[in-house]
Length: 165
Image (cartoon, rainbow, N blue to C red; front, side, top):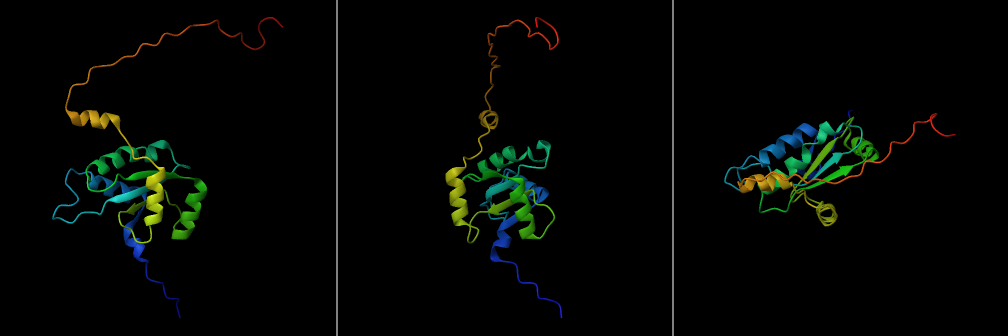
């Protein structure tokens, strides 16, 4: 007699796991079409959690821009928050989900039993702001701004083993 696998909790349909899965959904959310149109699209994320440890920055460096763009295309919802988590959190989350590695987890808007977590994150984590994106959307020519900084060049430090002692 094999043990019965319990049904997935209701929350499971509001959670996306994995770098590729979350990236694809953020891309769909930022595709220029409103999420609230008649065509059903993915429900927007409220929080995206990304592992900060064990990966090169190239692995997840696209998330701030993607989160900012996706948030700007969903004006009816609060901005998506981006939260980094540590290696120890990654290990515990992997064990809880029963998969070898978890690098990215995204929680959709109105997820059941997640209001407390989402409210806490929104209170303590600022939305992503991408200044160049706002400037690009304005459609106005931006003058080149070069800031000259006056510095002093001092004497070079003597190398070890050379000099006075």
